[in-house]
Image (cartoon, rainbow, N blue to C red; front, side, top):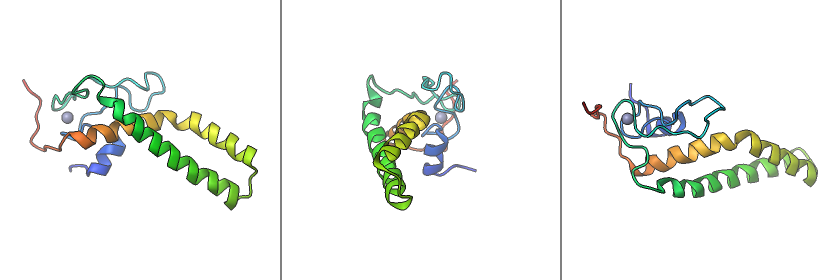
Length: 124
Ligand SMILES: [Zn+2]
């Protein structure tokens, strides 16, 4: 069964066929940033032009900003943490999830530009 667009973005799969993985080792901390050059299933290029992922930086900024505003406000006002405690918790959270945010923003970015094509097959 085909994944939804949101499912494909969060699973970090190819936007065209929604089958092949965008990253070399999706769940590894080593080579965490290494993307495949193209899809194993349909052959879609993952870097259509040089500097393609420049815009993903802004997606990353937006995701990180909102996440930390929500977490920071929840800790400060919901749990009564001090500003120092909240900033330390947010800094630790940044280190722990930067990898996920990086991948998710690249996945979102390529899904903006490449359309889903269920007929896509690997070129011979
Ligand atoms: Zn594909």
